[in-house]
Image (cartoon, rainbow, N blue to C red; front, side):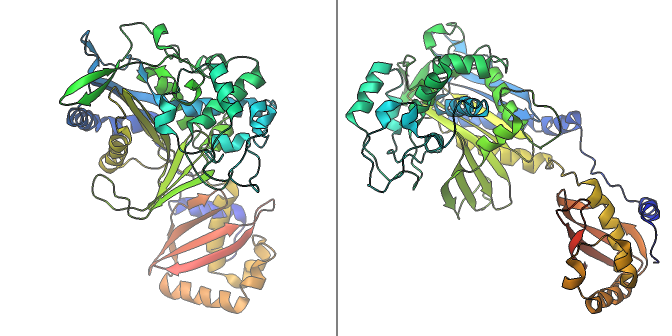
Length: 505
């Protein structure tokens, strides 16, 4: 192939059947794809509820930033025979944490605090705490968000602190905190840390954390049926909590709202919380669209980022029996993980006496699941992960496509011409300054010969499969065979080819 002008090369590429832009499915197409599996989802949730003796349950499926399916199973109130529905208000426990974290991020975005500010700047009682070791750094706001403040894990204890007053909390801090590790050295789940974040929100914003979250997050998202104090919930909507003991359900008393509500006090409906999960989901994929939520999409992604390593489970096994290693970390009020297939997940569980809940989204697939149950510490993460895995397996839902930069679309077609004609490659002006030092003409000449012998005359250039906007691979079909070519562009403008790899298929 002779060295053709850029426009001519592109014209030939289109003539060979090349379509640059990856054709993304529409929301309606993806919704239809997922909807076909929803009867199976309903069946799995119903069976799980019965097996685990849940009095009632509510669940929902979120797709591409929209709650597309929501149902209830069983009873929200056994005594009054009130069915559980997507409008039933369940206490969601630690699923509250990410809303508290979002409030902190919003205040940071407004320049009212910094993530690495010492906590004592806002809570004076924290200034003279005796840390686990003398070389421990000072606790920061970020440490609280990521469970790395050195506090001991406090789930059973913290669950019984929900309704304590500000005075009781201040008195507790003044007595001194017992630390289990040095600050910023280990992950240790701490409800105390999020109670402190609630106090920071009040100090910085000038209003109670409940009011700040109501005004700055819940209201903008249209979450009008979400509450902190259970006595404020309309009686017919409130899901009561139970515990399965000795073959029967035992009612569990509801805690009042208090300082520790910042770690687990929210009461909400599936229709309401679905809007919040959809907002997290809508932060992906990245785009040029204007921000329209309580915080920036980039800040949502910052919340979801794995800030504090948590666990590596080399023997993780999905409910289907598939073995797949899983690595997990904690973000800002969120758990995040990646499995052996590169599937990224983010969400959080919740558990209190009388309740269990969980939500999880696959960021790269735009797919999420939420579930609430009114039985003590209901293990909802198990069924939610099963639902996501089942939906992917049965619907074959694809990841969000990566859109290559226009310059990558141009360069890879030009590279096909160069591969067949290296003696003229330098004049094409498509290669970065390092290229011909790293790939001497003697090597490139061998590539030309190999290409001609193994592939022959080009008959089709397949669309590029981008790894990001400036790197990808593609397949070239010739009269004799096929090859895969990968390339990486340089950071300059316009971006040039700095590296390539050639492989006969």
